[in-house]
Image (cartoon, rainbow, N blue to C red; front, side, top):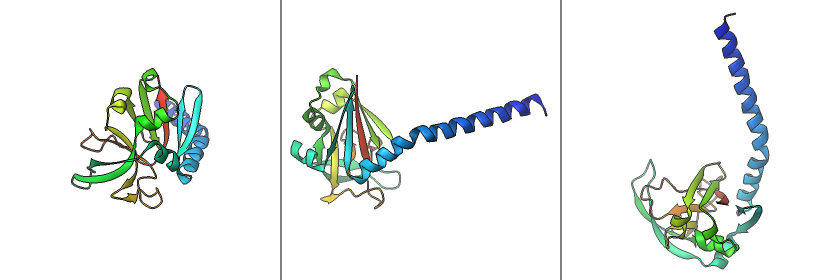
Length: 173
């Protein structure tokens, strides 16, 4: 067996080991995301704190109807009507002072994450957490929906900074 073949075998064994290790380490995270999605909850984390919020919490903050462009890779851009809350209002309702932080990282049940700066979140009427589209609840992952919660950035005209199936919001310094 050549030296190159031995190195390739070692490389593939090492990659396989790291793949299995990452699956093992992510097992709890995946189970937690699934539970949050099934219970229509979002875990908000900051510093050493965390709190779960649901639809009732969003509604207590005060919902708002807004319009946003939906532009997917398979459809032409259309303006849709949404119902949700401004993200900064939900965060402040948990007692977090956004001026002490620089970024929010929103994660969906599928592991997709989007980072938003404090300034774009604090911009009035820019970043929302929606739960209805065209007066209908967003629907869950299993239903082919994008909810129960979806992060929408109004200033994003190509819809590429949206996050479907939101289950976690990390507020970071």
